[in-house]
Image 1 (cartoon, rainbow, N blue to C red):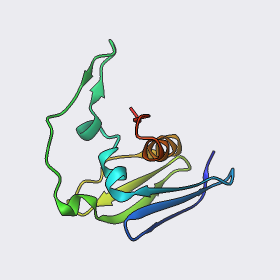
Image 2 (image 1 turned 90 degrees about the horizontal axis):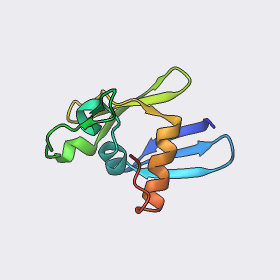
Image 3 (image 1 turned 135 degrees about the horizontal axis):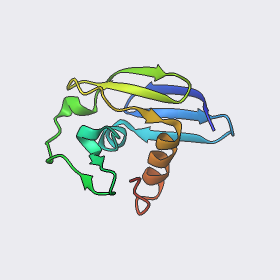
Length: 108
């Protein structure tokens, strides 16, 4: 599963997958599901997850400044508030898209 095309426009990230599926992820959801350790937390070898303290988002937090491709497996967004450490793998993007479609299946 790989994206055939990824395009950011308006307030969404549009993804057309090589299997024909199309997803539209709101940029706010994309940012809120950031997989980096500073946002999602880190898990130790015993399975305990250490979550960072909640931090407020500003309007700039949801402004996508750049979307860089990382190898052949992920993209790395740079946000308007300077945050740019999240690597969104293709699998993670699909999980976010599924969570947006069905909020009861939160991607964690």
